[in-house]
Amino acid sequence: MFRDRDVTSSMFWALVGILFCTGGIYYGLRRSGIPGPGFLPFVTGLILVALSLTLLISGILGKRNRATSAEPLLPDRQALKRILQTLAALCFYALAVERLGFALTTFVFMIVVLRLEPRRWYFLLSAAIGATVFFFALFKILLKVPLPSGILGY
Image 1: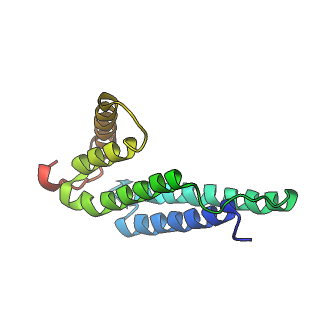
Image 2: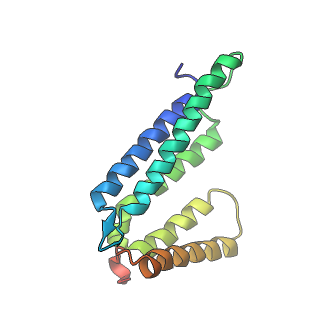
Image 3: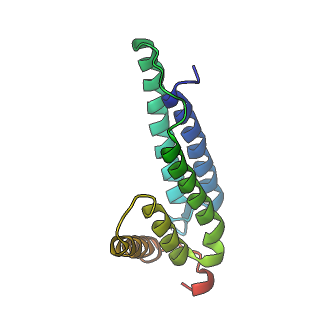
């Protein structure tokens, strides 16, 4: 049963979603009547769990209806390399955001993740700057969520 990619990956991502929800509750869902710093991770975790359960159910039900295939459990070497690089970038983000601050860490994270596929540098820089400014404005200005300031001071 657990050799099927959809079932295995959905169980993994459901666990990640539960961890996001737990972290969101830890940081607080509300502060002074506005969304707290844990609100977005909590909602993201709920969405991840719901999508994972949908994939799990379709994987289990679909397995009964299809013949067993010789589909490998793990992706090919290049895809696995990109997956591991993305997970490393996420770990970097989680560990560095308090020290370096939200803006700098988000900018570096976006550069690293967008660089996984060949792109021109002007696109990488403009997309990273745009995403950083968008999320900074959304959380800091619009939602008034306190963000880690880090070494840049904002």
